[in-house]
Structure formats: structure tokens, C-alpha cells
Image (cartoon, rainbow, N blue to C red; front, side, top):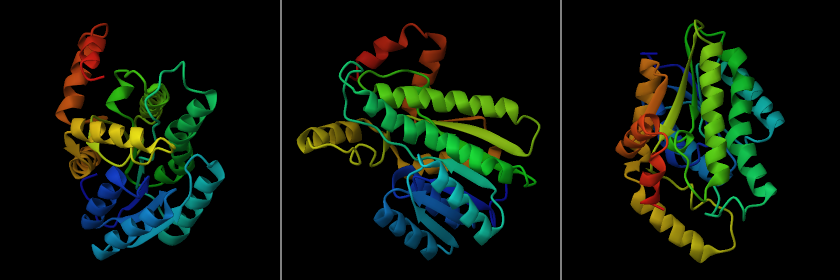
Length: 266
């Protein structure tokens, strides 16, 4: 998809981080934008910033885990823009670091509902509309931890493995159609994902956030540029950051040894 101007792009999780950076860069490229996020105030800030760059924007606050809300969002997008060319399922969350043994079933369910079911809702809701276009892009944001597991983040890792599996299945099912399917696997990205964790232990969260930020070598803006390049080139996989590329190689070539590398960073 070399030409992005006048394309309609749907971005979930657009209030901050990679989602906001994508919105602003696609606005600069001439895209019309349909944005969503559960954070109404921050989403509105993204909307204003994209409008300042000349984009036509609708922004609807809702939780992507709600299938009916996703359908209503799609209805509004089609009413306003008439078509959809690009869908980026980016919304996601994580929890404070805990072992699988410590976590409750409800903890797993909440992360699953947003990180996996939210992606599934976006895919199933918008795919019929993407199929109607001469060319279209479906992009699902997973993680390098969809290739290599990481301790004390069981719900996040499990959900991202599932996103990668879903995306690769879709790519096979949509082979030969107008829809290019891309899975994005970022390494450490400087975003607000840790700051957005819901917890009463503020001190622990701040410590986790400082540690995460220190170990995240890539900015959201750099990540967005990689994703857009992936859309333009119809790439099947987009690895973001040197850390992601190295870990991907280690996990694929030495699947029984990558855990030794992970231990250095835990």
C-alpha cells in the first residue's frame, strides 16, 4: 500500500504511546482517522493533535473488549467515511509483575479480554469492510513476548502469543485476497503501558515504570514509523527494536536456551 493519502485508518489504543504516534504520523501522510481508546481525555488530546496536522478525525471512547461497542464504532466509521482501508489493533494492557501462582483467574481474564478478545473483535468487525477495498491492511500488535516468554507477566505473554497465532492464521486464510495481514512484535517501547496499570500499590508501580522505561530503547514514534513502513511494504512481520530482533533470532534458533538470556533481565 504505497499510497496512504485519503485512506481511512482505524487505530485502537490511540490515546497514547504507539497508538497516538501512529495517528499523528498517518495524519501527516494524509489519512482519515477513526480512533478509539478507553481513556476519553487522552483520546481527545490525540484527536486534537491529529486535526492540527490536517486530518479528518473521529474519536470514540470505549473498551475494545466490548464486542457491541466495537460494532457500533464500525457503524459510525462507515457512516462518516464510507470505507475502511487500514485497521491497527493496538490496544493492550498489562499488570504488575506477579507469578502465575499469585495471579487470580480474574487477572488473566481482564488482560485476555483486552489484549486478545479486543484484537479479535477488531478483526472480525472490520474484515468484511477491508475486503471491499482494492487493497487493505490488517495490523495486529503483539509483542516480542509472543515469540519468547517472560516470567511474572503470564497474562500478557499468553495473550500476545495468542495474538500472534490469530494473526498468522488470518494471514493464511486471507492469502490471495486484497487484505495484507501484519503482526507487529515490538521489543521495549517507551509508552504508558506500565503507568496505566490499575493498582493501589503506587510505589511499586512507579518502581516498575522506572525500570521498564530504563530498559525500553525504542520510542513510540520510532515504532510507529516501523509499522507504517510495514503497511506500505505489506510485510508479514514487523520486529521493532534491536532487542526484539535479537530475541527473535535467539528464540527461533535456540528455542531451549533463550530463557537463559531472559534471566539476565528479570
